[in-house]
Structures are given as structure tokens and as C-alpha cells.
Image (cartoon, rainbow, N blue to C red; front, side, top):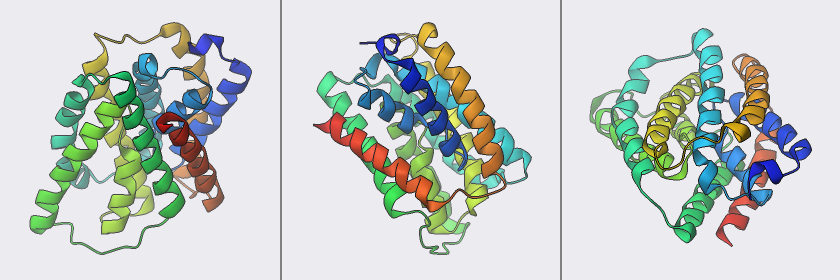
Length: 249
């Protein structure tokens, strides 16, 4: 089944809302796009590259808004990128079988759901943003999240954000700027790894990209200036939880 056979009157508004809500916290929305397609009964495997392009577009717009508002901290971002980008390429190069792919996707959606439902504002541990913990921990986290991003077709920002907040390495809006840049570069690496065996479906991409770009522009502009209410995060978490259950079962 392909997206063209799905009722676009339902799918397109869902993608618009997903892009709006996710970019309001600096994310690209790949997890919600995959969740929507999963709930619609679409085989997500052939469309991972299409989702990655949507992720790049949305996170790129989010980065422009959060970075343009002065929230980017390059010295914090770079240690993660050094390892995450090559790891994302490596993860994207891994060929997963159908059941394994569904299990990995379901696991990623489940982790995303738990992150949204349980950690709206993780406690700040106040770990110093310098010294051995940072110099070793940031690249290790980058490699782990990068590989996960490449293997599942997401950008990894949904996992990076709560870690940054938990460790006390960034404020909420700084996290939005860092996560959006992290997502764009990891998604580009994953896309490069997958392109030869799974080209982008342009017919599917065009209508989805149109609504995602508009949603991302609105959501990230608002998010760079006002934090979205907790209720929206819970709603997204429930959607991901249902999609995770469908993918795993």
C-alpha cells in the first residue's frame, strides 16, 4: 500500500498538525509522520527516505527560527555532531528485515512516547558543561543517538532534547535550536545512506511537503517565543504510544 491510496483528506491535516506541534519544540516530526503512516496502514519501509526529507524540511525551518532568535550554542552542538553524523550514516546503511524493521520502529516510537508522556520537563542535574563528563559523554551520546536515527529513519532530536535538559546543559529554547540542527544533519546522513536502495517518492512527497512546510513555519515561529502547553505533549505521546503498539504487535 502507498500513501496515494490513503485518504489524503485525513493524512494531510494530521501531517500539518504534527509538523506544527513538533517544530514548536525544535523537532522535525519524523516520529509523528511514521506514526501517522503506521496508523493509516501504510508500509513505512519504502517511505523512510520520503519521511527523512520531510524531517529535514521541518527541522530546517525550526532551526532558522530558533537559531535566528539567538538560541543556538555551537560549542555545545559540535561534540554531539562529530560522532552522530557518521553513526547516522552507518545506521542508515544497515539493511533490516521486515519484522526487525517493525520492531526497531515500534521501539523508537515507544521511546518517543515515553519521553513525551513522562518527561515534559526533566529535573536539572546541573552536570558541568566541561571536563571529562562532557568531553566523553557528548560524543558517546551523539554516536548512540545518531545510529538510532539512521536505523529508524528519524533525526534523534526527540531523544537528545530531554538528555540536554536533564543534564542541565541547555535551556528549553537552546535545546530547540540544538535539536533542530542535530536532526537536519543526522537526517541528511541517513538519507544519503538509504538513497540508492530507496529513492524518494516524489509523488507522495509533494503534497506532504507542502503541509509540513506550512505547519513547521507556524509551529517553530511560535515555539521560539512561547513554550507549548503540556497538554499538546501528552496528546502527541498518546498518538506515538498507539502507533508503537500497532508496529510491535
